Length: 76
Image (cartoon, rainbow, N blue to C red):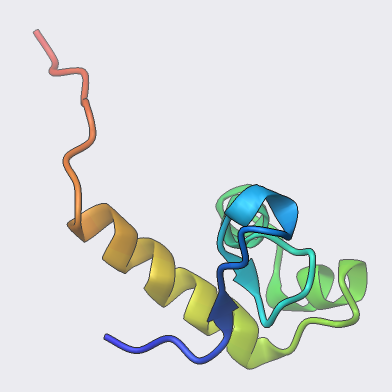
């Protein structure tokens, strides 16, 4: 899968995946979505972002989760 809007630069933000070379980590965007912020609220908070950035951040996060196993607490 190819991501045109997600960049990784070891000299920027400690090499964490960011949106379009901006100092906005993908994890920040995903966290805002998870916290229930609307697209409009996120774009107001980060005017450099574009709607397509949010969609690609979600796709990137989904792909990242597919690539590794996360520990889950099982119900008893």
